[in-house]
Length: 221
Image 1 (tube, helix red, strand yellow):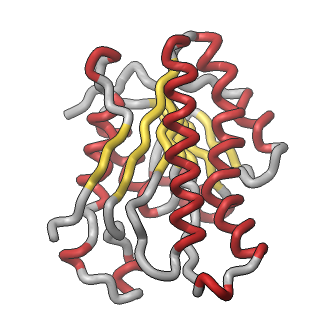
Image 2 (cartoon, rainbow, N blue to C red):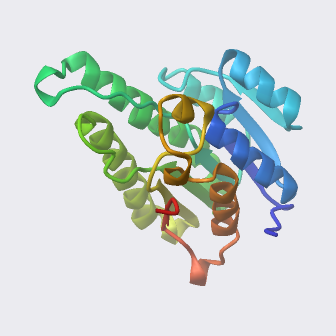
């Protein structure tokens, strides 16, 4: 098992299915958790997992940056995001804004929140969640996730000399969640969230000379 007893990890989207699996794995590995989320989902996560800090903010808002800067962390794992499908010819400006606000703008604000502290301590890791090709009617979602990946990898290239690295996690399929099962996604076509979380913890423990920058996790199909 990974040993993260010396790490403080900020986990955004606390209470979500992916974040919950990751939080459990990080807790088992000994990490100190800073939970970031909203409302009832955040409350459920805070009740389940001991955390050094619990921060209720809307990461779409620029005001969230200041709240995050008050906390010192070694790692940011950003799981906030949203999925929506629409016919390409019917997509609207509002559809575009929603996908990029939920998936890219939230990451931008989270990074702006943690980055000053990481640069000061000359050590840090930022993980964003990308996506494989999500299929028909997902052009805007896929584009927003491509932006996430490009942003994190560019951060890595810019900041690795200053001790801050980036990782993009690509779930190459749907994650096994109640919502996806209700939507009719077949069990064998989904990714086990706990197995995915174990891969995340493994990536966080890699030394600089054997680090991971892109991590693709596949279902068993």
